Length: 304
Image 1 (cartoon, rainbow, N blue to C red):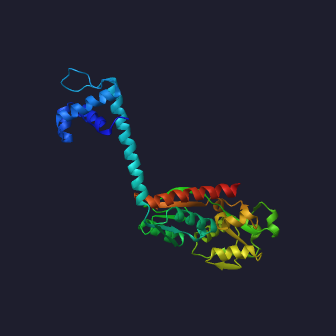
Image 2 (cartoon, rainbow, N blue to C red):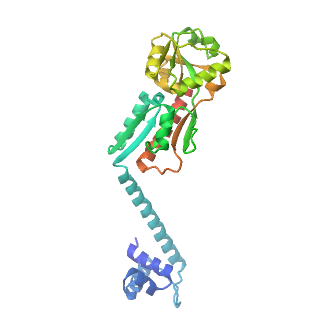
Image 3 (spheres, rainbow, N blue to C red):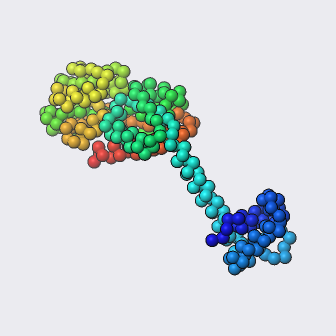
């Protein structure tokens, strides 16, 4: 293959118009530039520069040689950029803020896989309600956040929004498990566990009650979604939750998720959020991509 030195001398001469100009830029003698180009022509067996001109004009072979050199430089630049990128994600910190609904076994598996691929990265996960997660992202306390809502903050944008309807969650042995769809009035007399008032989920349920003219009296009210899931699994009652909270139990068949005919419960979303204008470091960006894949895969798995 032609040497990089000879190709560069030809390239610089063509770019600058003369061998003298190229020699000044390269800080070598003009005779050295001329000799290297001559040796390149001998090596390739073709003339690269048209003879008898004051300014350099490339032959077709010369154009091809310079194009090859440009592409080689471009590939080298891309390679070095990739190496730099790989080095930059060997260490560092990533801060992620999430609602409790996302703290599931699948989510833990995602983080474990990410940390195995990038063992030098430190991942900090902060759990809070929707308002607090949005605040952390807005104030750069977190690189990104996962919320059960659409962000209502001008400085925060949704990178990915996925439908996440609230559904009635029942044990597979419950009488309602034979139903595919229910109305809130149908479950008003049931023993029901609900998230407390600090959760966006509960606020949405209140709005849904008003729409359907129903009142749901909680047998269990708690700030722990895990406790609600255990309440349903034990058969003591039912709950209203997004499927992602009970994702594994739905896949195993231990729990069933029933649709409702309530427009508010059916229109809820999951959002992956970042601050508007924030440039994420490469490690955080890689985790962002992993989270996007995780959310899409979870949606497809439940649908299937």
